[in-house]
Image 1: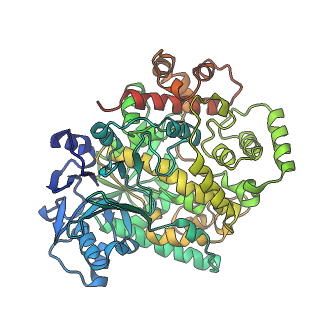
Image 2: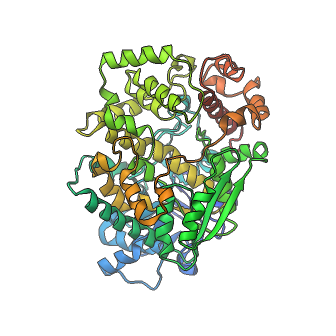
Image 3: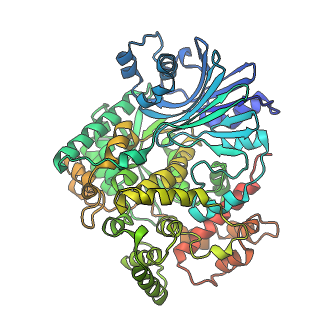
Length: 613
């Protein structure tokens, strides 16, 4: 992995050394720069492929210059397909040769994760591009004809000092993350997944092009049988794992939980190496999956390590963990992700994970009701009945209980507005507390996209899964893992987000995703081929984080210090009285939801107080 930074028509006030220092964790092995005319490009490299001098960046080739962050797993196949020859095996060089051959149409051919800037000196244009899912970040500051872009939002803030965008920050609290291209700053946008930006170096024009739209895949219907569909997924996933194992000159390991996603990836990966290194997390106070994971490790004879996380240093580490994100985050699983990556880096530099499986194959429990009922188009009677029952029942406090599941179901079924229904069923933060905002959340595009998705001729299940991919996966989950791994110069690879599965899986029949009340039905069938029986029957858990305990114990002092402070930032967004009442438990709300809101607001203030100077 790498760190990238560049400018067009923008004089940089910070030194080259400061740029490299901000990007060092993303690329500690090498640094390089290119400055010519109005364009400057900077790069820091984490060497994974082509460890020789041939892989250095910014890379120049026949009037083209590129700074590239990511991996193209099928690049040697593409060289063979199009007859491209070169002494170097660098995937970065493959991109340049493909661009020379077919321009930006090459993006359709690439299988991998990437964010890059490509300067075409002859045509006086710079292209900025991101992969289909948004695995690698790329932020863009635009001020008239001047542009600054980077994989680090903190670096853009340090260089450009943009104004804060309070409407965007309020929306971040409501949705649970910044939506699509939104950031905390005016004039700064995140280039969206599946998009590229074409910028004339004279600043005369720019064009934002969507080159991949997963909504198109969701509107296709495959007629394959369950057996044939499973065979197709098996073949595609095996190919994706193989490519991710082979596209590295360093050893590749695998995160191994007790679930089916990482278990299948581990089983497939073990077939492509002599002694696969695997890592399981054991979190104090949570369900212990290490014994289940160990059965997979034993079956495939992996070099297995159990990582114990006790959070003894959480209060000392929490500000650094949150500040790494460069923007507020409500995802408290960023904390164990940080510690897991830290431990894994002691053993390996490249690790496989199961990211994307839940969003593509329907792994969340909340998908089950959407499989059987269209909550986005419910009638008044249903909504009023749900509202009455939710108001009449005691507040649910037990996180994983059946009662809590039904209580939350009634809550999001009681709303009429599409954004309230979706946010209540997902992040579940400020829905119902809209009157507590001082600055109104800017949700216009979020709502427009929900309306557009709701108008598609697809099932309710596919609608919520499509929105999760476009919003939650690209806006919160993938950045969380990218930042956690990159904080320790560790590269994470996600076979479930390969080109072939992204184009095929959305069109599968709903029964292959949720059958009756069982999630991930097809993957469970695949798991029966590869994994011990006890693993294929495991429910979705993820990190069972003791957030309530943190808010009331380990993090109580530091959270109180931030949120009671007279100069706290959050009152510019949400009413101070509301947050104080939450801190002092004066609001009738579930313990888990209270903890989530406090964590999100705490994260907001930590971000603000740690802005780069």
